[in-house]
Length: 149
Image (tube, rainbow, N blue to C red; front, side):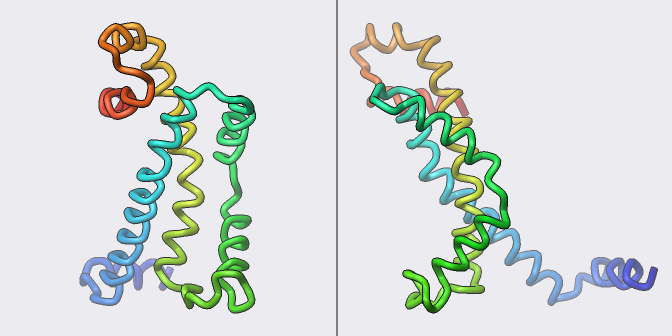
């Protein structure tokens, strides 16, 4: 009960340390989503419109990665950023950029898989019209992404 009262007191008094913690959390989360969206939107759209050998395997992989356990991602990022890891020289371990990397890895497959499905459905619906306007799949990506948002 004391912990609940202490927490309520910190929130109601707008404790500066608590505000800083919340600000870092929001910054990390929003940055991770922005990075994942910058990578996942074009990736998902490209997978939706391109036809290549192994496309179905890529789709299955994207869908499977949506269930990636956060502990596994955290461990992989830790191993990559630890001193003995390949990116250890960057000194990012236990920093907000490392948290952005881990969260972006978790969000990227979700954004890419959902984008793929939406763009594929939109291409089915508007593909003939875009094709009649001499807009190929590659040039249609920005239009379909804008329409699908």
